[in-house]
Length: 140
Image (cartoon, rainbow, N blue to C red; front, side):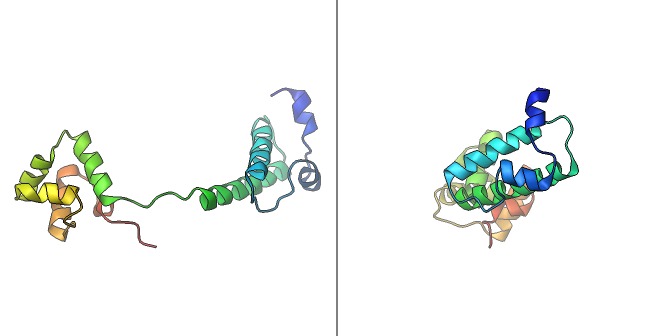
């Protein structure tokens, strides 16, 4: 960024809050866009004062909170994870069934007609070299 823009950005906390974005919870898309624009201004600075760094940290925390409330991440999907691992390893439902010792078992699991047992998870972890958490849904 040019030095002209850098001089427009206050260096002291009180002036940052007064001129850039009043540090309040973000509750609208417009406020989110405004806060993000202020973050972009600040991260473009070559050197930041302690107040600018603290202000940036606080503003980013507000943005993260808004985004996590508005756009929550889906929890882990055990069957989706299994399908992904199978695709990455060139496996079919028949291959999965053979791995599990019962050809129809693979199709039943993939179609959601059968759950993942402890023994099945152990076999899958061994085959794909992943931890068992990959095959458990998110627990709140």
